[in-house]
Amino acid sequence: AIRPDNLVFLATGDQVQLDRDISVSILYPPRADETTYRKMTQASEDENRTSLLMLVDYEGVTTLMTGDIGEAGERAVLEAGKNTLQADILKVGHHGSKSSSSEAFLDAVGADFAVIQCGRNTFGHPTGEVIEKLHAHDIIVLRNDLYGAVRFKIDKGKIVGISETTSRIPADRTGFT
Image (cartoon, rainbow, N blue to C red; front, side):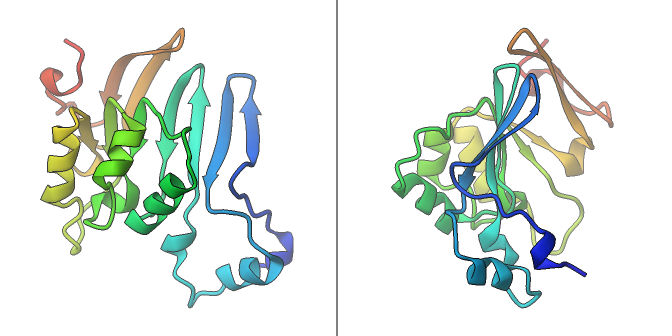
């Protein structure tokens, strides 16, 4: 069972240094009071709205981790004037559901690559609408349901390759030939 007295709640502005070359900046949600945090740990609470939006920096390559944040969370981050959303890689919010990846959010992130974490599901994730938006922004889309685990090879602050576990990513979809 979750014991709220043993949890550390991260919020906007928090920074975590995982290693010399790996840091995490928390961009969302805003800091809350103790009562709100305790309520978040209750099973009846909608956990999607409390997803962490994290910017992970590894040797200068940035990945925006969005959890299950939807358009409402995206709007809140944009309205707060977050100019730190720029990332090389976007982990698409909420498995590519129609409630994620607004045009304004994609514009602010400006990613080259998008990873959609999804598998077989009855929700229709990812939606064609989200895939179309990503392609319209010239973002290379990599999906776990099609390619398995996706790995980016990083060298000297640049993405120099992509690999996956199924060997099905066409070379023309990775940006590398």
